[in-house]
Length: 314
Image 1 (spheres, rainbow, N blue to C red):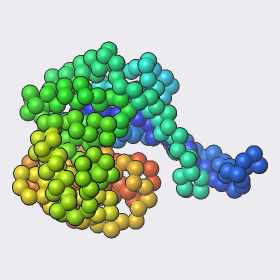
Image 2 (image 1 turned 180 degrees about the vertical axis):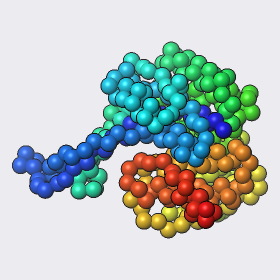
Image 3 (image 1 turned 180 degrees about the horizontal axis):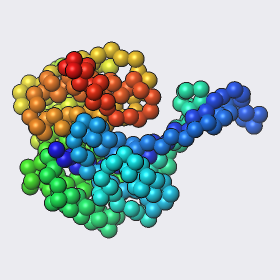
């Protein structure tokens, strides 16, 4: 099956080295640089997860007209075999890059290169044109809107892409951020994390079933969405569909890095719910997959073979 992913595409860059001394210039460690590793991040990591799960991702977003944009569009996407037809190049914004400096296997600093202003009218028309073209050429079953507040998912882009999906009967899943949190009216699946729902609900949200049910009801009233998934870190997740919601505990893990776990969970949930898999199985797979990628340093997609072994003993 095909899934279209629309949102903030970025590069996750890792500068790795060793630390043996403190700088004489300032009380900071000196990292002796040993290697640089560039990986696809943000909405592009969702595309990698979709690919790892056996579906075909169609990635839509923006890269800058700069060296990092060329690295992303001509290097990383080609290397990973992702379809790049939906990547737009802009001279009005830089490619988003998150650079993490690691010394002695520990993250010491993160440097973000980005522009977060909203798309111009010209950029908006370019992106929506790419989305329409992909929806016309491929038999898309699921649409994922992956928001990192970098300016791509504006209210207009959100409403127009959801409208396109609904016209074709495509399942719409949303991983929101705060800025346009309640703009995703009509989406099928809405998946905020605990911090995001706490920042946006007009009442306190706890990790109890009663409190989470209240939060899900609030979202349903605002968005008219069919499914609400609230990810709760070590507390697991809450999922509500047509019936009563349920709280699903997670499996204890040795956590190395939580980066990218949300990308993995929205990928699993969107694919599974779009083909009618039951909610309990979706929640179980989402918990297992999200925990799996947290055991690996850096942003990585899910390992399908490991997931199948953990979930089904295959």
